Length: 165
Image (cartoon, rainbow, N blue to C red; front, side, top):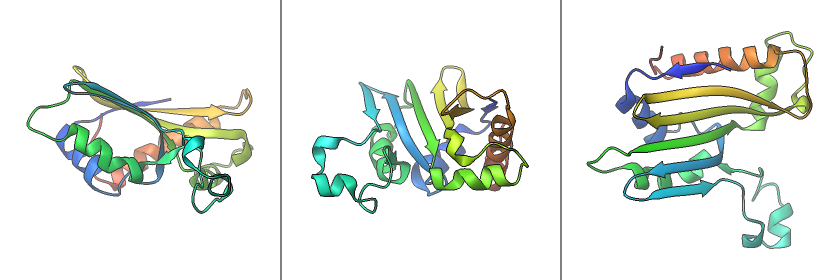
Protein backbone atom coordinates (compact mmCIF):
# COMPACT_ATOMS: atom_id res chain seq x y z
CA UNK A 1 0.00 0.00 0.00
CA UNK A 2 1.23 3.45 -0.92
CA UNK A 3 -0.29 6.91 -0.69
CA UNK A 4 0.09 9.49 -3.46
CA UNK A 5 -0.58 13.10 -2.45
CA UNK A 6 -1.81 14.90 -5.57
CA UNK A 7 -0.09 18.24 -6.12
CA UNK A 8 -2.55 19.86 -8.54
CA UNK A 9 -6.12 18.95 -7.55
CA UNK A 10 -7.78 20.86 -10.40
CA UNK A 11 -5.60 19.14 -13.02
CA UNK A 12 -6.27 15.71 -11.50
CA UNK A 13 -10.02 16.31 -11.32
CA UNK A 14 -10.08 17.37 -14.96
CA UNK A 15 -8.43 14.10 -15.94
CA UNK A 16 -10.52 12.04 -13.52
CA UNK A 17 -13.95 13.46 -14.37
CA UNK A 18 -13.73 14.59 -17.99
CA UNK A 19 -11.39 12.16 -19.78
CA UNK A 20 -11.03 8.41 -20.20
CA UNK A 21 -7.81 8.42 -18.10
CA UNK A 22 -9.36 6.25 -15.35
CA UNK A 23 -11.71 4.16 -17.52
CA UNK A 24 -9.68 1.04 -16.71
CA UNK A 25 -11.40 0.98 -13.30
CA UNK A 26 -14.65 -0.26 -11.80
CA UNK A 27 -16.46 1.56 -8.99
CA UNK A 28 -17.00 -0.34 -5.75
CA UNK A 29 -18.40 2.69 -3.98
CA UNK A 30 -18.48 6.47 -4.12
CA UNK A 31 -19.38 9.14 -1.60
CA UNK A 32 -19.69 12.77 -2.66
CA UNK A 33 -20.47 15.51 -0.11
CA UNK A 34 -21.76 18.76 -1.51
CA UNK A 35 -25.12 20.26 -0.46
CA UNK A 36 -26.07 16.63 0.32
CA UNK A 37 -24.03 13.50 0.70
CA UNK A 38 -24.53 11.20 -2.24
CA UNK A 39 -23.67 7.53 -1.80
CA UNK A 40 -23.21 5.23 -4.78
CA UNK A 41 -22.97 1.48 -4.40
CA UNK A 42 -21.12 0.36 -7.51
CA UNK A 43 -22.34 -3.22 -7.21
CA UNK A 44 -24.74 -3.90 -10.06
CA UNK A 45 -28.37 -4.33 -9.03
CA UNK A 46 -29.68 -7.83 -9.79
CA UNK A 47 -33.32 -6.67 -9.80
CA UNK A 48 -32.68 -4.26 -12.67
CA UNK A 49 -31.76 -7.04 -15.12
CA UNK A 50 -33.65 -9.93 -16.63
CA UNK A 51 -32.16 -13.37 -15.96
CA UNK A 52 -30.74 -13.45 -19.48
CA UNK A 53 -29.18 -9.99 -19.15
CA UNK A 54 -27.70 -10.85 -15.76
CA UNK A 55 -25.88 -13.85 -17.24
CA UNK A 56 -24.84 -12.09 -20.47
CA UNK A 57 -21.17 -11.09 -20.11
CA UNK A 58 -21.49 -8.55 -22.93
CA UNK A 59 -24.26 -6.66 -21.12
CA UNK A 60 -22.86 -7.12 -17.61
CA UNK A 61 -19.20 -8.19 -17.76
CA UNK A 62 -18.38 -7.24 -14.14
CA UNK A 63 -20.04 -7.25 -10.73
CA UNK A 64 -19.19 -3.56 -10.31
CA UNK A 65 -20.07 -0.72 -12.66
CA UNK A 66 -17.39 0.68 -14.92
CA UNK A 67 -16.05 4.14 -14.05
CA UNK A 68 -16.78 5.35 -17.60
CA UNK A 69 -20.49 4.70 -16.93
CA UNK A 70 -20.62 6.48 -13.56
CA UNK A 71 -18.16 9.26 -14.46
CA UNK A 72 -20.81 11.60 -15.97
CA UNK A 73 -23.08 11.07 -12.95
CA UNK A 74 -20.27 11.89 -10.52
CA UNK A 75 -19.20 14.85 -12.64
CA UNK A 76 -22.71 16.30 -12.49
CA UNK A 77 -22.67 16.00 -8.69
CA UNK A 78 -19.24 17.62 -8.30
CA UNK A 79 -19.23 20.38 -10.93
CA UNK A 80 -20.21 23.87 -9.98
CA UNK A 81 -18.82 27.03 -8.45
CA UNK A 82 -18.33 25.54 -5.00
CA UNK A 83 -15.74 22.92 -4.15
CA UNK A 84 -17.18 19.72 -2.66
CA UNK A 85 -16.75 19.31 1.10
CA UNK A 86 -15.32 15.84 0.51
CA UNK A 87 -15.49 12.79 -1.69
CA UNK A 88 -14.20 9.25 -1.73
CA UNK A 89 -14.11 6.74 -4.56
CA UNK A 90 -13.11 3.11 -4.08
CA UNK A 91 -12.06 1.77 -7.47
CA UNK A 92 -10.94 -1.66 -8.67
CA UNK A 93 -8.69 -2.17 -11.65
CA UNK A 94 -10.67 -4.02 -14.32
CA UNK A 95 -9.69 -7.71 -13.88
CA UNK A 96 -8.50 -7.99 -17.50
CA UNK A 97 -5.51 -5.78 -16.59
CA UNK A 98 -4.36 -7.79 -13.55
CA UNK A 99 -2.20 -10.30 -15.49
CA UNK A 100 -0.16 -7.52 -17.09
CA UNK A 101 0.64 -6.03 -13.66
CA UNK A 102 1.84 -9.42 -12.38
CA UNK A 103 3.71 -10.69 -15.46
CA UNK A 104 6.42 -8.04 -15.42
CA UNK A 105 7.27 -8.61 -11.76
CA UNK A 106 8.41 -12.19 -11.75
CA UNK A 107 6.04 -13.10 -8.91
CA UNK A 108 4.59 -16.54 -8.23
CA UNK A 109 1.21 -14.93 -7.43
CA UNK A 110 -1.36 -15.71 -10.10
CA UNK A 111 -4.20 -13.47 -11.35
CA UNK A 112 -6.67 -15.97 -9.84
CA UNK A 113 -5.32 -15.18 -6.37
CA UNK A 114 -5.98 -11.45 -6.78
CA UNK A 115 -9.50 -10.40 -5.87
CA UNK A 116 -8.79 -6.75 -6.81
CA UNK A 117 -6.14 -4.12 -7.21
CA UNK A 118 -7.80 -1.24 -5.38
CA UNK A 119 -7.36 2.51 -5.72
CA UNK A 120 -9.01 4.82 -3.18
CA UNK A 121 -9.38 8.43 -4.31
CA UNK A 122 -10.06 10.67 -1.32
CA UNK A 123 -10.56 14.43 -1.06
CA UNK A 124 -11.08 16.35 2.19
CA UNK A 125 -9.58 19.25 4.17
CA UNK A 126 -6.16 17.59 3.89
CA UNK A 127 -6.20 17.62 0.08
CA UNK A 128 -6.44 14.85 -2.47
CA UNK A 129 -4.79 11.48 -1.94
CA UNK A 130 -4.75 8.20 -3.83
CA UNK A 131 -4.12 5.05 -1.82
CA UNK A 132 -3.38 1.69 -3.38
CA UNK A 133 -4.40 -1.64 -1.92
CA UNK A 134 -4.56 -5.28 -2.87
CA UNK A 135 -7.44 -7.58 -2.06
CA UNK A 136 -6.66 -11.29 -2.20
CA UNK A 137 -8.90 -14.33 -2.27
CA UNK A 138 -6.75 -15.92 0.45
CA UNK A 139 -4.01 -14.86 2.85
CA UNK A 140 -0.53 -14.81 1.34
CA UNK A 141 2.77 -13.97 3.00
CA UNK A 142 4.14 -12.84 -0.36
CA UNK A 143 3.65 -9.06 -0.71
CA UNK A 144 5.09 -8.80 -4.22
CA UNK A 145 1.64 -8.17 -5.74
CA UNK A 146 1.26 -5.10 -3.49
CA UNK A 147 4.66 -3.80 -4.59
CA UNK A 148 3.88 -4.39 -8.27
CA UNK A 149 0.54 -2.58 -7.95
CA UNK A 150 2.19 0.37 -6.17
CA UNK A 151 4.80 0.70 -8.94
CA UNK A 152 2.17 0.30 -11.66
CA UNK A 153 0.11 3.14 -10.16
CA UNK A 154 3.16 5.39 -10.11
CA UNK A 155 3.73 4.67 -13.81
CA UNK A 156 0.00 5.16 -14.48
CA UNK A 157 0.06 8.64 -12.91
CA UNK A 158 3.33 9.58 -14.59
CA UNK A 159 1.98 8.59 -18.01
CA UNK A 160 -1.06 10.82 -17.45
CA UNK A 161 1.14 13.70 -16.26
CA UNK A 162 -0.43 13.75 -12.80
CA UNK A 163 2.06 15.13 -10.28
CA UNK A 164 2.25 13.66 -6.80
CA UNK A 165 4.40 13.40 -3.68
